[in-house]
Image (cartoon, rainbow, N blue to C red; front, top):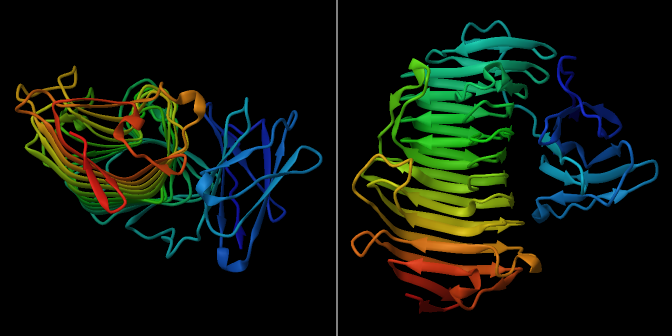
Length: 447
């Protein structure tokens, strides 16, 4: 079963690609950063064939990412490219010299809301809605049906059991130039955000602030301007982010805690709550221009940030000046019990690892903090030969009293080969102790 969507004619449509799935045309939309196609695919009905027509010349053979999925594109006649999928996948098709085409096959919805339900704000497919700022109520669902475009932002405080879902598009351009978060939940409990596609943000895209029990699932994002963080977990606990595709010009997923002050009164909030129990898994991250793929910091004006796990992540790129793995403690917090596990990196340019205790323009505390008990396990970095000696790693504490301590590297590989010495990461260290490299059954204390 293939389900396609008809979007409003006011949307921007691709001038580079046409796409069909099992012979059914799928609309391809355009942003300045990437084109994208959305459809629903029920894998129980058999294999699906995706055929992309590359307009105005085919060019080189496309690469399908993440590479881990092992899907190869076949170039046919008449500027067509074909590939097959056997499960719902979120893919990037890349041809040199062109914007990528994101092919987002979604699994069928379970129990979608019904139009007319008094607890459902229903935005019907095929239409565009200028909403502005929407404040949700407890027990309410915002449903953006496939093919619908919701233009505005969400700002909700102190509510519970709130849901945003649907295969529609959340368009932040309503607030172009205003630097406001697209979705902001403050001190809410039991929040679910799933399935939506987010484009044209004016600032941070999803911000659970001082929330508890948050699930973010199958969200797709394209952030184009600077400062478009993907998901900012600010002072929140029990957060599960999974099966998302995040393309951002700043941090893709970041954990913070600070007193947030923005131009709008509803965006001024003291979010100085200790983040805890945060799990990010089964995601694909694309970082461009600035920021980091996976970040804790910079703003950490709390006592502690603990129990943060990033697991089974494909990092397609960190093209700018940021890092793949980033801990930036610019305040007094203790960052501890952090796990990066089963991470695959297809490209990073400036920094591989960046762990630092420092001061910056983001600092609000006079006291410096600590970083300790961090593990990087089963990491594979596909490093091209021309990056060798250029892409560096940094691990720097503040002083002898504010150290980076107990960092373990376990089965960290470059091009599939486990590193034998930490210097292979082109690493510079200061005020760092208990740095351990595990080599099969043995452990080597580096410093």
